[in-house]
Structures are given as C-alpha cells and as structure tokens.
Amino acid sequence: MFPTYRNGQINYANRLAYRWSKPQRGDIVIIKTTGERVTILKRILGLPGDRIRMLDGKIFINDKELNEPYIKQNGGWRERELELKPDVYWAIGDNRAISEFGKVHASMLVGKILF
Image (cartoon, rainbow, N blue to C red; front, side, top):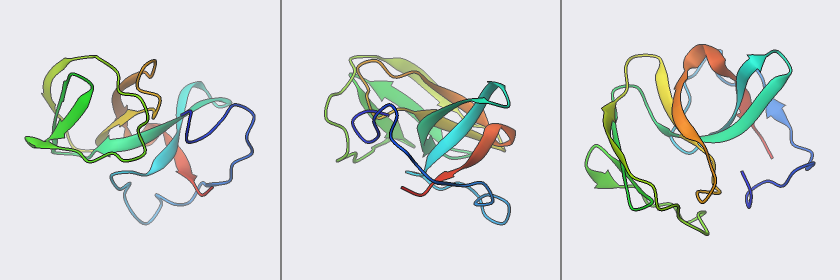
C-alpha cells in the first residue's frame, strides 16, 4: 500500500467495522489470505454488483473513471470488464506499478484500517 502506508508502520484496525455495516468504496482493509496470521492491506474500489474495467492504469466503475487523488504512479495494466457478484468486492493496492488486484469475498475481510 506504499505510499499510503509503509512497511513496518503501526496501524490500527477495527475488526468489528463490518459486523453491522458493509465495506465502502475507498476503505483500506485487512484481507486474510492463506492463514489466520497472513494478511495484506488493500483498498476496496469495487462493490457487489459493480462492473470494473482497467485501461492503461485507470479504473472504470460502471463505465465512469474513478477519481483517485491518492495514486502517485499508475500501472500500465489492462483488464477486461468483470461484474462483481453479491458479497464480492474488488481490491487493489495504492502502489499501482507493482500492486496485485482482484476479487475478495466478504468472508476474507478482517477489518478496516483506522490510521
């Protein structure tokens, strides 16, 4: 998530954030990957039902380009359009030059970063 967060930076997370509400576009979340202690930080950009497309490093949601003032360096990737199913979100890191991205099921969301 560099440059928003740096390796080793202490962050606080609300593990109850999504118990009573759903993730919102722009939330920075902790995602559980292969085990209980293996997690990554990503930004939620796609919500259930959204159509997502990437073109020349820009993200389009439902055919509208997403305004992302926090991005310092775009990636040059391109991805065909996909539609998110219920309980599925789309997340990506802020360092677009090297960030992984993809679908994330709601059950993989551990919590929301507070700061």
